[in-house]
Image (tube, rainbow, N blue to C red; front, side, top):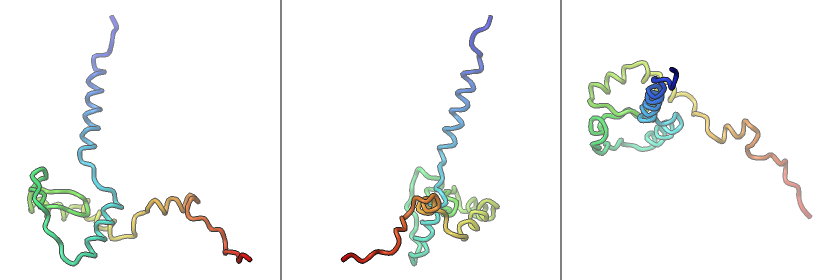
Length: 121
């Protein structure tokens, strides 16, 4: 009687599989997407995307705000009408996301204020 639990290995496999699925579709952070939107606004004309066989729809159908590729134009249009995309658009139109400099200044580790320079004789 006794011995190891037969479900222990199954549980380990399931958890490792779930983490592998999560990391498969890593999205860009808000700050990276915001920077790309600023660069795109500076450019006058949008360049067509190069075809890529590894991406859905050969990489031609891309949502910059959500950082997602789609298989066809119909699926992309459906995504544009979704609640998730609309929330993301509203988030990107708002104020700029926080940067590391903002975090350092809030923690008191930013640029030191040494006061006015004294004249040396």
